[in-house]
Length: 282
Image (tube, rainbow, N blue to C red; front, side, top):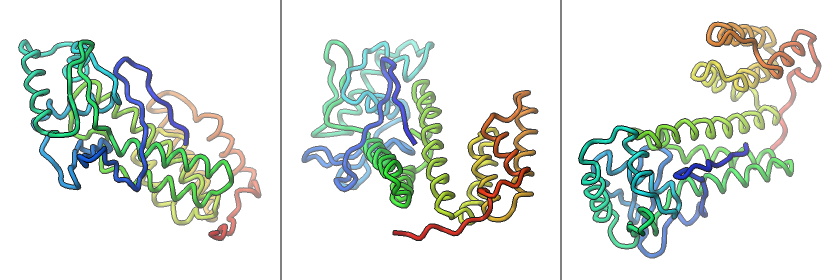
């Protein structure tokens, strides 16, 4: 369930504030969110953020978390290596538009070293980091029920893909990174549920996830384990064979050690894979 951060010159580091505060910054009551389409809300009311490139600039600046971003880095992040001829005018226009849209409280300024956004943050990212950290701590202390609840609350913060709909090279890379982070936490939550004896509840979700991510071996492993724990070892072997074939067709590779080990344990009828009673809730 652990998550890393990027170390690029304009990378993102996910950090979260208290869930109960609704991510409000000072008295201006502004909340910004990136776990889905970018949106900004003032006192709970969504405010218009302008055209797509203007929104992309805001998303990129939010991910700097109070660090200035140079003009060249901003252009590269939003337009890539082939920006339009009048890109400097566009940057100035969109920065002015964001200042008007964000209103009082947040400040978008030029520092001499770059553009700096203060007084606004990606509040849902801060909340997610806190929830994931608490889930890790709960899991490490053996509180699997609480760990699963916290991981579920972190999942509920998602409203779609990361910065959904915004086309910018930097955001496209971040979107891939956040997809991986989301799946890692989801896998940990499902593993905990299986350990708690709730395999039956999650077989259908795992089938859907394997269909959506057919080459992700950890999901196949969890599906196989859940099927065994619900008395369906034959179906688990079928799931393995499907994964083996997909990996061979797509990558010319065999399943990894974890998947092969589980396959062997099923063939040997390992008693630890038999159905188990659910762990009662505390």
